Image (cartoon, rainbow, N blue to C red; front, side, top):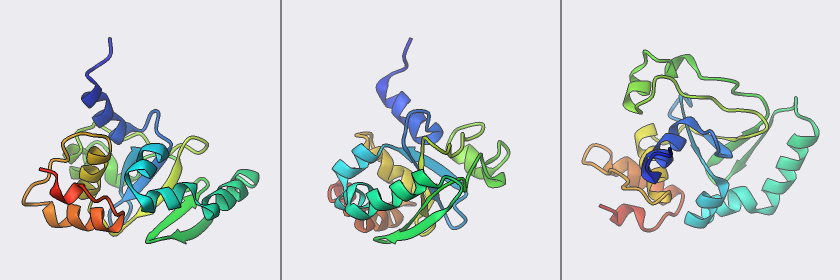
Length: 167
């Protein structure tokens, strides 16, 4: 039997089983969080341009035609990479890391070539980015005094207007 919808969404942000975008979040891109291009594009004009603008289609098509090639370009403030950069979890996200305990999983699944588009987000704290993804997916973003400034920065960067007011 299925879990409650909010539990399945929370799990999807962490595991990425049916998502099509993998975000490498944090200074060393050590945490992988997942979402759907469609949901993100509807929540943010920045994500809409990133995932459905003319440059996206050109770069994604080039990556599909030469899978071994890693293509990088800058869209807004985010570096997008296609290819085989991440094939599993990084050492920082293993089962004994504080990051994996913080995000509530024994081990994160990794980026899967052919399923996920990889987006590097080294300038946002993982907990703040997760709050933003929760908000995009209509969950309580769990904004606290500890993460409010970082969540506000993420919402500003991706032009997600309602997030700073959510509480």
